[in-house]
Image (tube, rainbow, N blue to C red; front, side, top):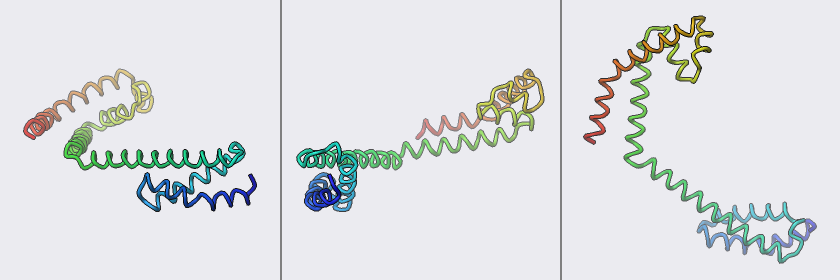
Length: 170
């Protein structure tokens, strides 16, 4: 199909496709955007769609599919916003942030070497690599970790009980 033929095809069907799309999405601007996207796809596939009949069929099917994709995306977005506005999500975020802050403060209270070991472990670095970076033995790393975990458990046990009480009475 030549450019001039496609231009005529576009001029003939653009408004129809916009109205068709608007019957799905109920928004004139969105419908116009969808129609434009569909015509671009149609132009890209013009060699595959040899007849006017095939091009029209493609236009309507592609428009319907684009509209359904748009509506599905809107639904997902709406569900996500509802989730963000939920009380449970709010509580989870508060607990997560407070827990992170408590853990961060407890780690900062560790001796320097233990703090470095724990921070590297949190990043997923294995004991041999930590030992290499700190220029100590793997056994030293294991001991530092063991002592650091014990210290973290001791310093965080009261906060753990506090969080459980908060969750229990909420």
